[in-house]
Length: 206
Length: 104
Image 1 (cartoon, rainbow over the protein chains, first blue to last red):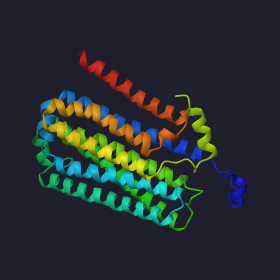
Image 2 (image 1 turned 60 degrees about the vertical axis):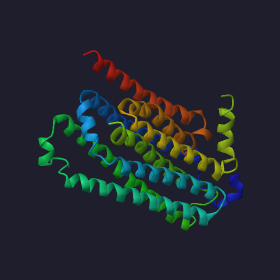
Image 3 (image 1 turned 135 degrees about the horizontal axis):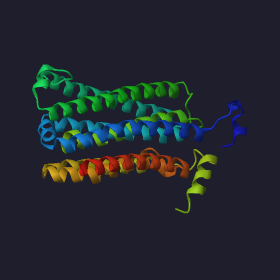
């Protein structure tokens, strides 16, 4: 696929450069969450019993369900990429829409989970939380910070992918020009990877 | 590891030609779901199993996503190096922190 066949694409294009830029951004995200993971590891080593007790408060079934939801949404993103590479616009849009539905499902489940915690008096700065042992306060502090920050990333990722869906519909993303979709997908996969770590950290191994 | 340079140039030149199909990714997804099930199973056997599951299975799952879903497998050495260096840096920070904590 040479540039000559696409004279209307006279503007300089550097798909590898675009992916390189995305990866550099993703590396900063890895380090951002990495710092929080290190904080978690230290606090867990300091308060093992409190972390165990507070972790029992969390609903592992919801956590695992959300994991499967996110893993599947990651699959559909990468499938939408295969579809666009094959020039199948309908399938691309179908896969992307599925991802959006799954992403929203994740947020809905997450909000139910948080709502239950709030009902039990567990939210940042809550009076009930202040009566708990210090280690449990730290656990819930990390829980709300890390799942909250992750939730913001899910919302950002959904917005990006919704925009990609519009671009596919307008054929601004198409078989010979899809690096935007690739980069949007990369972001979504990273959000998935972060959740892969959050699940055992908070729901299973605490 | 003799092919990365070739793969890199092939990727740059022929982007859009030699790509994996739907099947590859569905298989990776299946592996991810099975590993998640294994992780949950291990956590039922007790705390230490859960921690070992976390330390072993979670990095495998993350690698699968990085390698296949995020196409690192099909990228050249530059992107791979960037990711490895950043993960290595994180590991060093982990090691430094715990070497400090352990000897207090």
